[in-house]
Amino acid sequence: GNIRYDAQDATTLDVSGVDVVVALHACGALSDVALGHAVRESAGFVICPCCFRSNPQLRVALPASLTDDENPESLKATSSNDIELVTVDEWLNVESAAYESLKQLAELQGDIGMSSRAMHSICGLRARAVQRCWQNSRWRSEVQILTKIKSFPIGFS
Image (cartoon, rainbow, N blue to C red):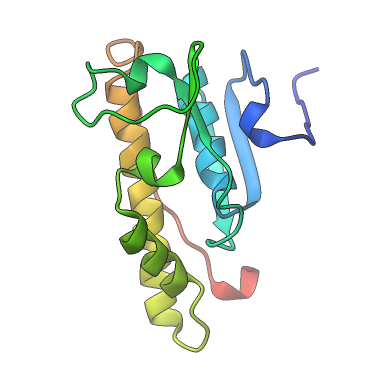
């Protein structure tokens, strides 16, 4: 069929040939894993992140070509083959301590303004990571990527 539903380890999920990656209630690093799949497959994506401090053990699977010396912001790889697993910090090109602080602010209770700004900042880092990887990918001249960050009222959460 045209729709596939998978319930398994997202890091190693085979998404070959997908046109769109949809990740609803993508807790913490699961959002980054889903974006990595979208970048690898040149797929559109809709990601609804939450629980920003969840799943820190997950790694983002990227094409090995994005982790070599041709990339000016080279990512450090932890495996071989044509897929490389990188930490979320490496994927986002952000220092661990700064990112941890941002995630804590995103989950701050009692100050919706501060937590909203932190969430938006994390989404901005993710959009920048997608743009950076896409521009360094084999699709840069064939497919244009446009990322948008949308938010919705807290009552929908």
